[in-house]
Image 1 (cartoon, rainbow, N blue to C red):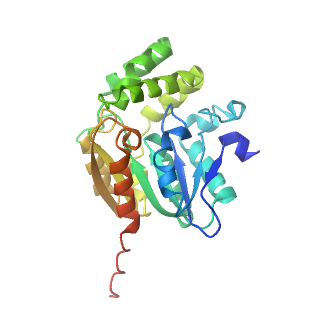
Image 2 (image 1 turned 180 degrees about the vertical axis):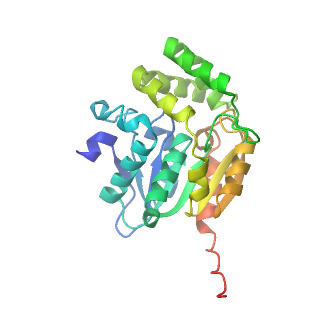
Length: 275
């Protein structure tokens, strides 16, 4: 399998001697969504961009419904990309569902990850008892039914709501177009896998240092989700970005870059004293 073709891999930065940062986009998107952030870090990292199989410029022939019937299939792909293209433990940056994909991969091979930056993550989208994911079971059922019946109509309605950023309408149009370019059959399958998943236990098992970047007003991942993950992840930092929408790397790039740089530049905590 040619990984470069499968995942449309692109590498920026000088590379030689630099640690590796790998960026993974969210549902219905592609690697172009990192265009504001990637150049900012290319001077200090070898930055790897790629498209999830079934998205962007990936090889659609590589989409296997059985393999990608869970997010673990994408996590396995991520580990293959790290083995093939990275140098040393990586800084992983994942948006939305790719934040979960990164956590799954890091839990399998923690030695391959130096840190995780999770942008708008959510371990579970459906409310469950005291846990608030932002959606009821009926909400998600209606969402998936609407996608099934009229994917293009769903895209034109949901993309602006997901993007938010009402003062930047071109971003909502961009996300709508990105959704509409995605193969509808693949998008419907990926949406079902994404929105019905529950990875709260996987986030709680994570030992990799993590930055949780939470937006102050996010339809997909409300504030309670970020607070839950910060409590669950033993080595995490929570930063709230003042932003309306689910894509701060597009609608609030300066604040996103500042939060990432502060996290990456923070000194490592001192080891606990011997007992």
